[in-house]
Length: 219
Image (cartoon, rainbow, N blue to C red):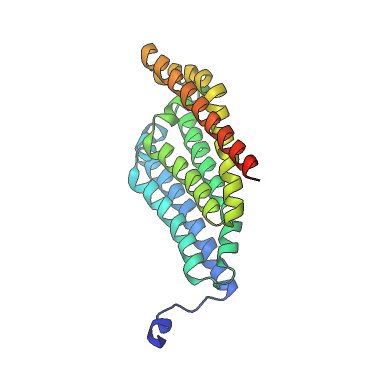
């Protein structure tokens, strides 16, 4: 038993942990900045597609951010590390949005005459960029949810499902038209997706109402 306890790493001082956290996050930003300068130097803004499609660059960017959270959890004080990680979760949403803005700015510099719609379409059709943004956003949401107390998790889950049902019923079919214009989705496939969104949303909404009525009757 004593040997097992001896393998647990001693917590780092708060100042040291904070410095390590900042260094890792700054390093993630520096990776994108250095890669941008490198590809720009190789061929100007016309060459920037190589950056936005570079899985290695964005994987390194995501890896450094992930390591920053791992360091906080692994070397933080046991009694407070979950609380500290919960405080830092919003940075994931900021970085997720930042990746999209970063890519949009680069694409605009490549072609200043491009319309906003064209730039958005290019960003959406760039897997490395879109995947990084979605990964950070979903990672932040899941991590924040996992660190909540069980009672709060149930309430958040209920609210999320209600919002999802409303989006599928009211917003889904409408914005599918806009998505079709951006991505050139065939009209037949679009009709099926819109119908599926409506059906799934209604089904989910009815299930939530049924569950709520059972909860009220049990009281």
